[in-house]
Amino acid sequence: AQKVTQAQTEISVVEKEDVTLDCVYETRDTTYYLFWYKQPPSGELVFLIRRNSFDEQNEISGRYSWNFQKSTSSFNFTITASQVVDSAVYFCALRTGANSKLTFGKGITLSVRP
Amino acid sequence: DTGVSQDPRHKITKRGQNVTFRCDPISEHNRLYWYRQTLGQGPEFLTYFQNEAQLEKSRLLSDRFSAERPKGSFSTLEIQRTEQGDSAMYLCASSLAQSTDVAGELFFGEGSRLTVL
Image 1 (cartoon, each protein chain N blue to C red):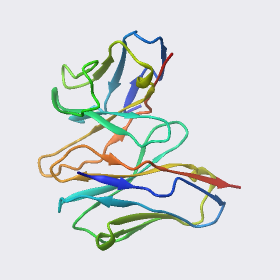
Image 2 (cartoon, helix red, strand yellow; image 1 turned 60 degrees about the vertical axis):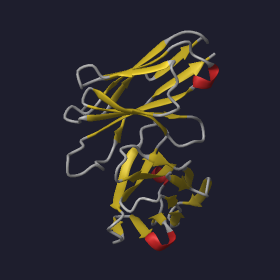
Image 3 (cartoon, rainbow over the protein chains, first blue to last red; image 1 turned 90 degrees about the vertical axis):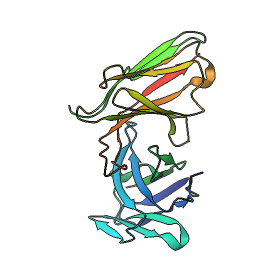
């Protein structure tokens, strides 16, 4: 069975602070895919990034960066110099190689105050 | 607009009534998914189609729920004899799954919010 744990439920920061969102996953499959989605108040889930289990290279994209560590089964997401528009619910999700569905965590509500 | 569209965006109904939601995926996408999201939770998988074939159904999908994708394009999700516990956001997503890559990212619609009184 697959499981995604997002232990943080709500995070509040002041604009321009850096913030890291944690994600821990469980799977017995050796091939799997990890995702981060953002859900703004409008409700639409917006795809941010996908990583494969065989690619532990971390990535930076503008103000976003991701830290994937198989040894700790973690896939954390950092926003640098946060902005008010980053306020949203962020979901980490897991998909195994033989399965088509995504298993989501419960989400982290990020509030960025001016 | 070339994204995933869902209709209606909001539906309020009385317990016992039937409701139907429609999803139009991104046109070239062959896979279509339905998820349910309740307040404070992440989306939960309900079912998915590859073209017109329904390939997997979650145990969450009771016999009151039925989904179809008759021509491999749009899909409908019908809930019969609605219950208050059915109140949730119903999300549709689509993806382009190729034989060499099973993990195409999912593109979600804005959801259909159901309130059962």
